[in-house]
Length: 405
Image 1 (spheres, rainbow, N blue to C red):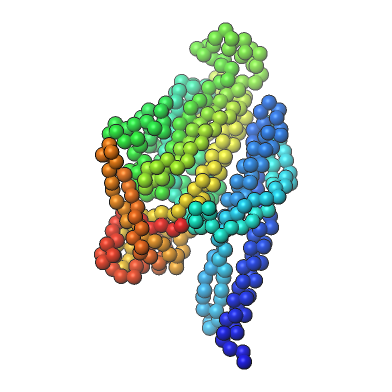
Image 2: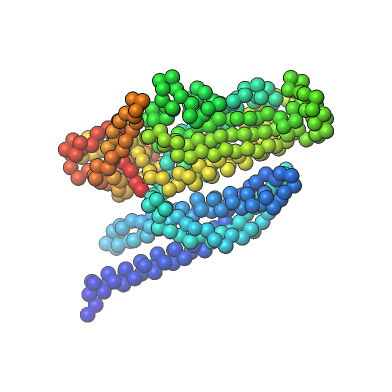
């Protein structure tokens, strides 16, 4: 007899086959581009670094999901499948390679073996929000060449644009904010109140999950040509290299958790490029002419690399959003459709506690409240979730958070 149980079994087999089919297709190949600067004519080294960047890009692309919904339309059930996957790469093949202005670009094809979640158990793919503060220049006099006096605000603004172009994070420019009172010792410099940084306050004020800051350590010439920088040796080297005026870009990048203030990622970038324009040109950072210079293209590669590195580091971090309002059994979250939240998504509520360390500085602790919330309404910048009972009964308050792993 053909029963409903038989129908369910057939549908289950169909769904399983569909998932396997999708997984197989997903695991076939992904194409991605990588770039690297060529130093000392070492193309092999540049190829290795460009391939490494392309593989990171491919892994990020592989970390995608297909929506799943169960709907009933005109009496007919329609099912869509969800597949969440990270991936391990193998069998990397270079499809094309080109060199322009001493920068090697290549396109690779990578086989991705899907995994159900990240190593730490995280599997969500919501767009996490980051705020990018100013990147102060450690030696301000170095901005004189090219009149790059705006670099402390324009470089992080360009980084925010590159991160948003990648599409895995939502970056906000907060380049009017300076994090470090002592650049030399950053990121461990001490604020006037004795705390190491004010990241927790910044994260709360700006409504973001992560804060990115940095220090521009060096943008000086490798062979100085300016009179106030010359020594007899540098003067001789400058004459010998007058057709190739090289300039440094040394950058330290720091990524903080906005809720705890913890430094979770840092990276040191050290590149150089040709300053191929007249010394008297007031180029200014980020201008149209700046990006046409070899030096500008090198800076663009650093920004792209740092955007990919940051996205890769935060991909497997849990998604956290503030609760900014409670009303009956409804709570309002500080993230919405722009972060990828959809109706029916579920989160876990965590309570926020303020504790004090041995120096009596405030630290934030998040404790699992074992309360689930289901999203019922979604707007671009916020969402509304429903609790099983009134928020007051569960003691869910403003400034508590929801987390998805």
